Amino acid sequence: MNLPMQLQPYADALIETKKSSLIIRGKIGKATRQASKFSGEPYWLEADAYPTSKNGDPLRLLAQINFNEIEVAIPNYPTKGILQFFVANDDVYGLDFDDMTNQDTFRVIYHEKVESDQSKWMTEFPSFENDDDFPIEKECTLSFEHFEEIVSGSDYRFNAITQADQLLENENYEAYDEMAEAYFELASGQGSKIGGYPFFTQEDPRAYGDYPTFDTLLLQIDTEDSLNIMWGDSGVANFFIAEEDLRKRDFSKILYNWDCY
Image (cartoon, rainbow, N blue to C red):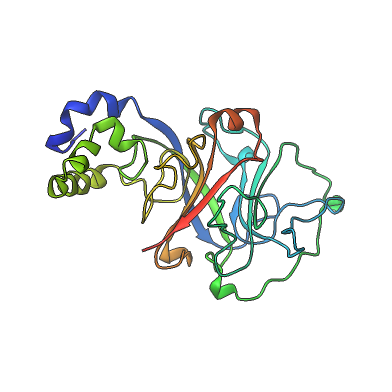
């Protein structure tokens, strides 16, 4: 690893943070109902109530991941079934700034078993306006590439692992900025992915202990001009889960965040 000079003493500790991830590659186009996709119409059964907020507004599919399509499994994540991410079709994309775990205007739903009888699938879905204001303007088909990555520079654990917080405590901001910029080139955390480490345009919402249990990146969707994906002003969205809940396939407790420049 070509680490900045200030971080070379922590090379072993950084290598120990290595995690598997699935980098998401997208292509604008219509996906089949069960397929992995950004936006579009979800796999859903006619007999099940469609996801809505508490006030009855339907939520919109942001992403659908069909783990049966993924050839290389990564530890703790599903190896089968469909995982879906819904958000409100509003100006903040369903984010509750006061409680980022409040699954009212966003929802994460896992279908461990997928119904193959298409006659049971829902065919009529809610219509949504303002496509230009939704972060993903056009439906995208998805593919996945396995990758190994070390902790990103904006992950809340980075400073503790490298003791970089001591530079901040000593008000040595110039040295910190120089080190952080060099490390960002090595491990920015950018891109759409499952697993691995996150990227933020602002800061990690877990940094101050408000959401200490959400240690695992479930999904990240980054701005990508070629796919007509834009979070505010070139931002990024992240969904986090506790590793223990991920192992249990319990998606009832999720931290949802997005930020932009």
